[in-house]
Image 1 (cartoon, rainbow, N blue to C red):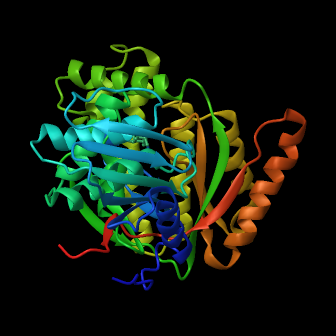
Image 2 (image 1 turned 30 degrees about the vertical axis):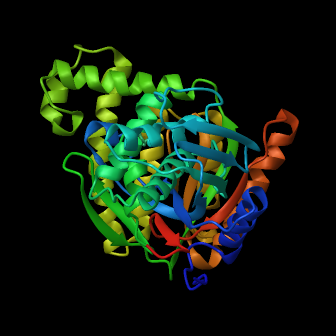
Amino acid sequence: MTLDFSDKDVSDFELEAVISKFKKRFNCHPDFVSIAPGRVNLIGGHVDYNGGLVLPLAVDRHTCVAGAKSDEAGVLVVHSVRENESFVVDLDCPMIAARPNWTNYVRGVVHGFLSRGIELPGLKILIDSTIPSGSGLSSSASLEVATAGILEVASGVTLKGNKKPRLCQQAEHEFANVPCGIMDQFAVTFAQRGCMLLLDCRDESIEHVPFDHDQLALVVINSHVRHELSESEYANRHQRCETVSTELGLESLRDLTWSMLDRSRGQFDELSFLCAEHVLRENERTLKFVQHMKNEDWSQAGEMLYQSHVSLSEKFQVSCAELDELVAGARKLGPEEGVLGARMTGAGFGGSVIVLAEREKASDVVSRVVEDYNRIGVPLSRPRASGFVAKPAGGARVIKFVAD
Ligand code: GLA
């Protein structure tokens, strides 16, 4: 089979690169390549594990996993180009988390297949990625879903509906020890090119909402900062939300109302109360943002992003000085310079911010925000930020080079 490069989400370069690296490593052509995008979340920060409303969008940065069946039954040989490391999985031994940590995203997904009784053949696997790790663009969910794609095609078993993202989320919980929500794996799996994905995390329903990329652009600025406490603070916020909802007798904070919250004043410590308030307001903001986007009211949509950022920073308290500074820098440029709104994206404590910008001025926005931030940063010797204009990409898929 020849490659069909009409697939515009993944550049020829990304696909060609993974194929040629696979050939070089394993001395044969891959049988299949599984591709999964990264994502940004436009709005709905830290509400997915509260049954809330989120609005992610897949971006044109991908994990590419190439695979071929091997003669060695019961063994997976896995190589990561980025890590320049390989490891071997013995399919007949019980799977446990191990070092180095990146292998756990693969181990967890393999375990998910095996524990569902799905038989896997021996495989050679090579992983390549253009998603910067630690950038808040979900490189881990992307790796999980791309790995699941390879295992589906290799085993001949397709995981239908929400089964694949759920299996990947479970891998992250059990093998990477991160109690994440369902947003990232759903976004990576179900995104549609040119669209945002409105996901209701309570009933897992999805609406694809067009992102008007004739007029708008989404800018991603990576702070290249990742603070130590990021994982423990994520688990901490998750726990606080769960405590509030359990004590109020709710299934999740999605069912919280303003009067309930008001009545509960004094019942919880201040941060837990503020977290619950954020979740309640953020769900409202997600819906408002979608409505403003549908009405082409870009400035109101942008205002929702600013409000979301302030709430994540002051109430949920998951931002950091670098992200606040990047958002403030974008805001300072304002509508005259093409900036409509900005907020942090992902788990927080580092990673990236997104800027909703006018299409025409988007490249200038990237350079202005990055240059201003880096100029101030030099005396502080902090990592230099970098940015790009993201294209709303399609979800994960697999390209086969062999007949079934
Ligand atoms: C991380 C998690 C998601 C979500 C976001 C915050 O990306 O993996 O499940 O909770 O943080 O919105």
